[in-house]
Length: 79
Length: 135
Image (cartoon, rainbow over all chains, first blue to last red; front, top):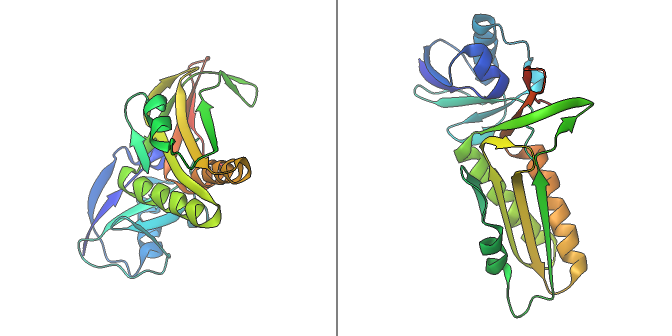
């Protein structure tokens, strides 16, 4: 399956890109993050992140579909 | 209406949008770029957002404020990009018939925006280092 993954803030810096297409097998967002964490060396665990799929916040167990756009949202600091 | 803006916020225009004959109060909040954080000297901030989701979540917060409090109008604009010390980073404005609801709603909106909306600040320090804040 092919997914589009968006990165922000410290995850973006660590990944070295704002977005990438990945071809991976992952049952849900949590499994996908685990694989991408290993690939990029992200230090943040999924307990500190939220996840959004196709522009909406969803739970970590949300099933992934081919072509989904997934964003891992680190703790926010606007204001 | 909630907006992410890449340019300076026109606060006068926003305030005019809140001016209604039925309104007896207007409460505004301005978040400014401060020259320090936790004892470190800050020279500028860089704000990044997930713009499409920030728009949806920000709009959701304003809708919540309108249903929780007896207000007439609410606006919030948040900057992204590089901001210097003293610049306006976020503006919230609420109008209402009476001041109590306007104060409460303004406070609710800025608190929820800071907690929920996908915007991040990268602090650039006087010593040349920088760091994203992930509280």
